[in-house]
Image (cartoon, rainbow, N blue to C red; front, side):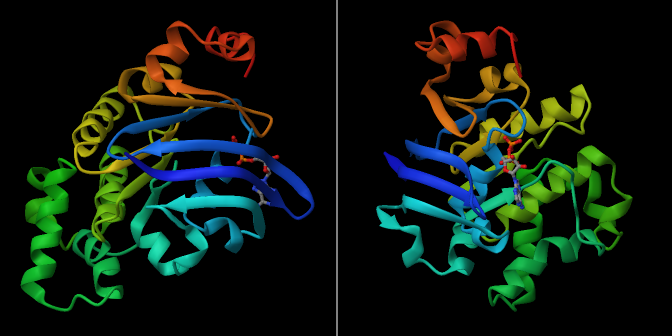
Length: 247
Ligand code: ADP
């Protein structure tokens, strides 16, 4: 089943066209990787999907459908809630671990302390952090290691029960072990969430994603099952990128 559909999507910053005529359908509860050289428009695509692009001074033409309806028919708040995002550099709020995880649920109206405690415990468990931090929930999140901070940011994004989790180069500041932790977590999460991950790391796309989209200069060159993209790409440009000829 498709959860997101892009139809003839163009994206702009000012007059500059960043994405050109993107058509793609994103499958529910699968991991979709977006690959392509720096500056090709991968982050712009993520920003378009949850209506962040408009706030960054960008605009779109064409259509993005979420659950069958144009995303413009949802409020920006609602889109942010349904499609969460985690960025490259882990950026916990400068407050306690507990408050990092209750901030968004409280914003969306949950006041009940027991309910908030449950959310905190549940999301820390999902992100594999619970055992490491259960005695220190009031500690500043900024005292966690980089890998722990990134897992906290993923846990935080999940506190409002999004349907889609987007990650923009989530492991590029992490070492091999922390990267492996996050990849394992994403594989588990894909049972319940749709995951879209922008990555420079082609091996990572190959290891964890079901589908891969290759973008070059704002164009979707090829989009297919990951196995096909890596083993039998149709387009010469995809093959060259996979082989490391450019990018
Ligand atoms: P990628 O994620 O593939 O590295 P981006 O989507 O970040 O690419 O950038 C695509 C293009 O959009 C680049 O040319 C970049 O300079 C431009 N761009 C990104 N953000 C902005 C912005 N806020 N204002 C103007 N141009 C931007």
